[in-house]
Image (cartoon, rainbow, N blue to C red; front, side, top):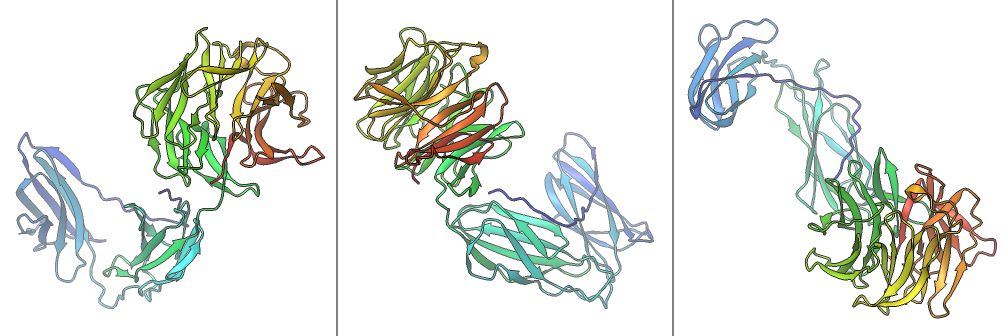
Amino acid sequence: MKYSIYILSFLVLIIGCSEDRLGDSDVGTITGTVIADGTNEKLANVKISTQPSTSTVFTDANGLFSIESVADESYSVQADLDGYVSQFEIANVTNGTLVELVFEMKLEETDNTAPTIPELLLPEDNAVDVPTEIELVWSSMDENEDDDVNYTVTLYNDANDDVAVFESVVDTTLVVQDLLYSTRYFWQVAATDNVNEPVQSPLFNFKTTTLPKLNILFVKEINGNNVIFSTDEEGNELRLTDLDVNSFRPRRNSITKKIAFLRTIGGNVHIFTMDEDGNNQTQITNSQPVQGFSFDELDYTWSPQGDFLLYPAFTKLYRIAENGTGLTTLYETTNGNFVTNVDWSRFNDVIAVKTNNSEGYNVEIFTVNTAGDVQDVILSGVPGGAGGVNLNVDGTQLLYYYDTSGSELPNYSLQDARMFIYNILANTSVELATEVETGYLNIDPRFSPNEDKVIYTHKGRGFNEPSQVYVHDFNDDNVGFEVIAPEGKMPDWENQ
C-alpha cells in the first residue's frame, strides 16, 4: 500500500543517547542523569525502571543513576518522581555497551487538562464507495492555550497486514491517497498535549469504491523511469507501478485478470505479473531474462488461457508457465536473426513472430503453430524496420507497423513508420489511413477488444521525442483518431 501525506506542519522530537564500547561481554550498563526541565536542577530519588524489566534504582544527590549487568536488548527506560511528569527514553544495549541517557523532567501542572477525545467527522463510520484519495477529518479541543497538541493517526485494512501510522500531525485534517479499491479501512486518532496521557478516538471504518473499468494500459516516463498506468476512453487514470522502478510493456490477460509487464532488475529485463489494481507484483522469469537488440522493441505474449507466456531471448522464443516453471524453447531462428516480437491469437492457436538482425533490420514476420513450425510468411525481404505485431481474435488478421521509407539508419532510427493490417487468408496488406504527418511515427499498434479500433503510439522521429497514445476508429468516415494518453506509449487494450 502506498500513502502520500500532506501535513501542514510537523514536530520532530530528537532523542539522543551515546554508546561506548565496554568490551566483548554480552551484558552492558545503562547510566544517566536526571535534571529538571528548564532549570537543569539535579533531581535526587528519581525512580528508574525498565521494560523489559531489569533492576530498579534511584538517582543520587547529583541526579545520577546506573543499572549494571544489563543483557543485550532494547529497553524502554522510565523516570518517575512525585510532582513531575514521567519520562521515557530508549536504550539499545548491544555487545556490552555503556548507554548514557539524559532525562529532563517537567513539573506536573495540576490544573492542566488533557485534550478532548477526538471526534471523527469524515468519512463517516461505515461509509461506502469512498474514493481512494480522501481527507480524514476530526475535531478536538484543548483548554490550555499554551499546550501544543499533536495527533497520531492509525490506518489499517482488511486486505493485508499493512498498518500506516502518521505521527506528529498538528492539523485535524490528513490527506491519504493510493488506497486499495474495494477494501475496508479502519482508522483511529489519538491526541496528546505532552503533559497528560494521550486520549484516543473510537475506531471508525469505511470501504473504498470498486475498481473502475480501466481497460487501456500504457506507459509514461517519469523522472527517468517507465511507469505503467491504466485508463479508459474518458481519461480516468490509475498508476499501477512505483515511480522508482523501471516497468514497461504491459500486457493484460482477460481470463486470469492479470497484467504482465517487463521490469529492469540489476541490468536485466524480466517478466512480472500483477493484479489489475497493481497489487501482488510477482517476478516470473529468473535464470533466463528477456533479451534482444532493443528493450524498447521487445515484446512477449500470454497464451490464450493465461497459463503460459512466450518471450524472446536473442535467437530463441521461450515458453514459461505463469508461475515461473517449465521453461522450454518453442522456436529458434536458423539465420541468426533475433526474435523481437510475438503474439498469440485468442482462438485457433496462431502465433505471430517477428525477427530481425542485431541492428533491427532484415525483418521477417511469420506465423508458427504451438509446436514452433512456420506456417505463413507475412513480411520478408523488405528494407527498413517493422514490428509491433498483434493478431486479431481468431488469428486471421495481423496488425503491424512498417517504416515505408525503407531506411536502415543506425540505432534503429525509424523515419516513416505506418500501420498495416495483413489478411492472412487473402494474403493482402492494407495501410491504415491515420493521416500521420511527415516526421512522425505510428508504432506499437494493438486491436481494441471488439476490433473496431486500433490503439497505437504516435511520436516524432528520433530519440527522446514526445509520444502520445492515439486511438483510430475504423467506423469514423472522417478518419477519426483521438489522444487517449498524452505523454503515453506502449499501449495495450483488452477487456477487464
